[in-house]
Length: 305
Image (cartoon, rainbow, N blue to C red; front, side, top):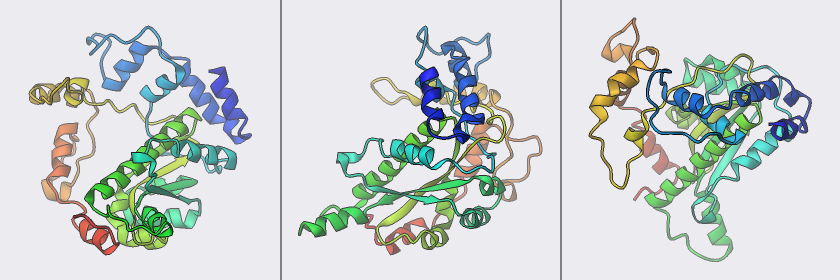
């Protein structure tokens, strides 16, 4: 942990404040069993889903204890630290090393506020000193082909999927880097609800499309609660896909999470006591969302054939 702290403190005085202490707090409780129980929402008396190793490296412990940050200090992220986090994002694997993604760095508070207002219901976004927009970028490949006198012959849905995966991987690496450096982050998928506004704001040319946003900054308060994930046996399938245990596993999983604000109450009705995870997932998935995204992508010059 001393090495991790040293790497953070070398990046500027701001990074020596709350974030370094936050990271140290996580590492001081580097107990694999505690980390696994927290990640899956297990009580002390519940059996573990698997026997964890006796110890895990600090970097792995940080990943297992990752949680979102939605409250940020007003301080800017020091430029050396910010650029290092972005370098870590670029360290993500990329399909055939084509690197078909772009990251729009937004630090203008007015622009961040406009994005928050368009999204609605997430005013905390305005408190983030940094907003990163991760985009799929097919345009760069087209230009590279043209520079070498070759036609871009893979302008299709597979390229769209590859560019989306590249952007998502870069976002994931940015989150991991932020956590390792003691910063906080929260992905924002709602940018795709307003592509017709966000694309002009960021001057996205044809062939470039938003995948997700990411708020980034110094946490202003203790991090959010640790969101338990679905039981591993529902997500990790050995040798072949088998979801036969879904129905039996959901009640316990729903019970491991506090009731959440019901989604789409104007459609499915209010529920003052809150909803469990599975009910809220069903509420959200049963309402068409972003049904205008495909026409916008086509208008933006993306071939989805």
